[in-house]
Length: 245
Ligand code: SAH
Image (cartoon, rainbow, N blue to C red; front, side):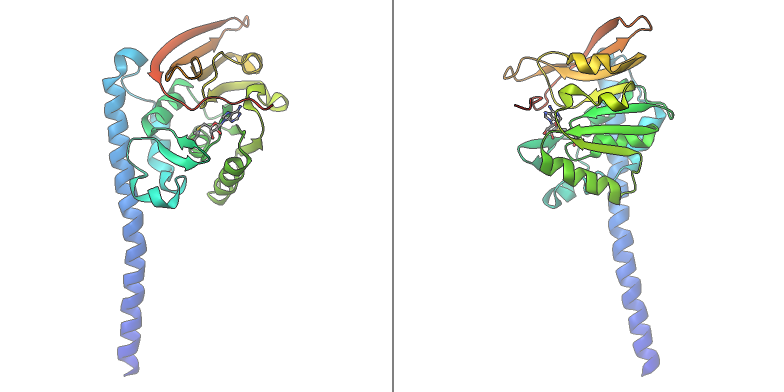
C-alpha cells in the first residue's frame, strides 16, 4: 500500500516537472522560430539597412531573453510573434525585428556603456544588457518604469540602471555613452543626447513630425572631431517622445 502511494506520488511529481519543462520548451521553441523570422526579415530589408545578417551577439541575445516575461500575462501565448504588443498606459513593446535591428545598428560591444530612452517593458534594455557592460534606461511613465525595474532585477540583469524621468535630457552623470538607443519618437534629435554621445559613438533614433504617423529610423554617428553624420535606415512607427511639463 505504502509502496503504491509512493509510486503515485513519484509519478505526480514527474508529471508536474514535465509540465514545467514542457512550458519552458514551448517558449524556447517559439523563441527559436522568432529568431529565424528576424533573420529572414533582416535579409528582406538588407537593401535599406545595409545589414543582411544581424551580429551574432545580437541574435544570441534574442535567443536568450524571455520576451514572454516582458508582456502582460494575457499576451504570453503570442509573446514570440514578430509584432508589437500593448504593455499598458497606452504604450507598446516594439516588434522584435525592430528591437534586434536597432540593437544591431548600435553595434554593441562587451565593454560598452549604453543609454536607452523609453524603458517601456524593459525588453530592449535586457537585449542590450546581454551585449554590453552597462545599460542606463529612462522611462517617463512611473508605473512602467517601476514595473520594468522590478522585472529586470528579478531576471538578474544587475548591469541595468533604471530611472524615471524625461529621457530627452539624457543621463548626464553617466555620460558619455558608446551608444544611445531611443525607442520613442521625437520630432527632432535631442541636443542633450548628441552631447552625451562619445566621439566614435552611435545613436539609433526614430525621428518624425508628431501626428504624421511614421518616422525615419536614423543612425547618427559622431566622429572624433564631434561632428555628426545622419543616415536614414527605414520607415518606422513609434509612440511619440513625450516631454515633462
Ligand atoms: N523599449 C521599450 C518600448 C518602448 S515604447 C520596450 O522594449 O518595451 C516607448 C516608451 O517610451 C514608452 O514606455 C513611453 O512611455 C516612453 N517615453 C515616451 N517619452 C519619453 C521620454 N521623454 N522619456 C523617457 N521615456 C519616454
